[in-house]
Length: 118
Image 1 (spheres, rainbow, N blue to C red):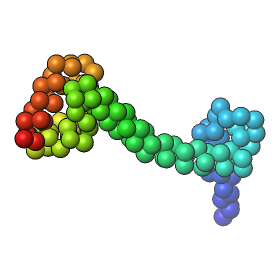
Image 2 (image 1 turned 30 degrees about the vertical axis):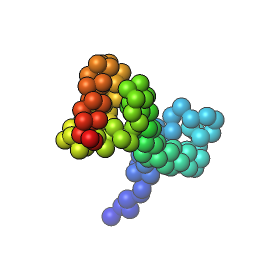
Image 3 (image 1 turned 180 degrees about the vertical axis):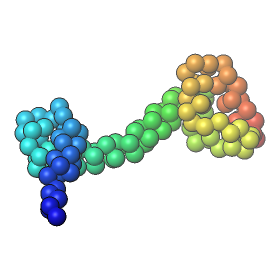
């Protein structure tokens, strides 16, 4: 019986890696060994980046809410504490959108938070 060689699967595996490395600079997109290293590194960066993206957006939302609070004579932490005590369960993303798009509604929320703290 003929011996089965692994050339086909090896080629497929290597081509898959080279396809992922398409567009990389120089030999990183041409040679398998360097392409494999570059793809592994880029995968790590992508994984880290997905976590950082969440962090950065939350930071942005908090900055926007804080700016809206300062315009209404309040700081961020007391505003959030007041909302929690008032039973308002809006997330930071929605609060930041309200602060930008509808300042009158945000002022009403700050008043609600102030009343809950009294």
